[in-house]
Length: 296
Image (cartoon, rainbow, N blue to C red; front, side, top):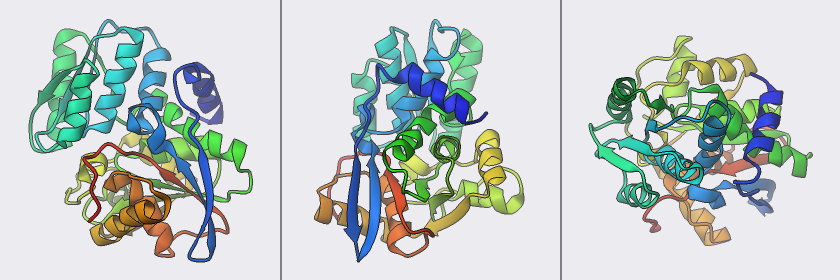
């Protein structure tokens, strides 16, 4: 996988995705660029990867996936656009806002288990038993390339950006950002919801505990093998933020910019606010808005 895969993905999905805007601003006396990807169709960057995966190979008769919510909604919507029946497994802890949207997109919804890992195992078994395409949430080359189109848009429109800051669950967006942006990447996770940090420390993906207010979007219990290898090879920086920091950052996005986002989307902004991001001009990817949103 390399940058050429991202360029191919961008051409493939262009008729369907939104080219989301960049917002240049100054916060606490420092310049900042924000990629407003929460304005993407389905309310998150996940639509890019799901669509690229369904368009990039043989068209499946049916598709099955598992998700904490955003990927499931993206697959359901991409499948509807392409006329493919979809089944989405989510853990019973998935937010109702995401469940409602998945069902409204026309997918069959199955709630099972208390974690993404349990839902994923059930979805994989379903796909194997029914000969459906199983589409992983992050550890898939076409998914990663699709997510990388977000960063490719940033560098095309803001060549002065020197650092990309992204939230990490299983690592699909972060790995795609490495390939699409070809800039230093800061991969940010909530404390106690840090599968990629644990993988980088161990030298390989390991099972990791999940306990954060952002777990519905970033609650992967294990980093992907492919996403891990991309981030490790790139020397991506790993940063943690507390739940208190990410919620404060979410509220500040609303107070100062009137951006109503889900907690996971504020994670990279929280790291930048805390001074944990190097570089002169960072771009924070504001990645999702699928929540019943209220400020704390």
